[in-house]
Amino acid sequence: MDEIEHKFIQVQGLKLHVAEIGTGPNVVLFLHGFPEIWYSWRHQMVALAHAGFRTIAPDYRGYGLSDPPPEPEKATLRDFLDDLVGIIDALSIPKVFVIGKDFGARPAYLFGLMHPDRVLGIITMGVPYLPPGPTSFHKFLPEGFYISRWQQPGRAEADFGRLNAKDVVRNVYILFSRSEIPIAAENQEIMDLVDSSTPLPPWFTEEDLDTYGALYQKSGFQTALQVPYRSFGEDMKITDPIVKHPALFIMGSKDYVFKFPGMEEYINSGKVKEFVPNLEIIFLPEGTHFVQEQSPEEVNQLILTYLAKHI
Image (cartoon, rainbow, N blue to C red):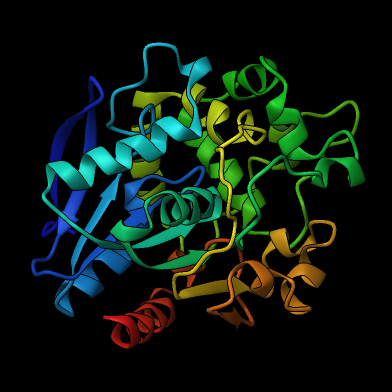
């Protein structure tokens, strides 16, 4: 990991942190999810750089080493998308392949829809393309559904505030590595769903946790709760929701997101391909929500095979 370089780029009045490795004309832009950060792409960045690609992975505004917005509670996904344009412009990069994980799938596809001439292809993991607009999963799940809880101003802040940042990340990694949707009982908070004696997933080390913990200790969770969780209804003014780019969706068969109401049918019936006609779907039988960290060699090969087809 020592080969990865770190820089700060001034965009829209904020200093945004970008990790970078590799050289050459073919560029891959990595977009992290929650509770992730640029570091969640460490295995992919090094592998792709060794294969001849230039790779960049920013921390979104308000995440990790990037500056927070002046009013985190007013941050929008559009701000994030405008930041991405500013970053690749500052680095003089005309076009990119975009790879997004978890909620990073949303800006990955929206970036392709809003700036089609800047995108060569799109890969997402853990979350498929979902048409722009508000989601309705919460309508079919109990009140303790983690997204519903985190959308309530102040509730997650109070829940997370009982722990240090490292333990919050630890708990979310454990919860999101399971195959069941995190749902708390009426008298429980989401952090109560993990016992302090529960071990980390075997592919996630204490050193990894220390890295994440330090980055979230710096940034806090205020912006991360706003985007994505409190901005799902944001109107992106998309007039044509059909994605024209070649795309790849990688999902673990044991990913809890697969249990979201209607998700399995949406993916397996081919409905998702009505919106992304040039989509390839690959399931990893033992994969959980963090396939890129759980099975880096397998995921790296899938990415490289896709990129070789579309360069």
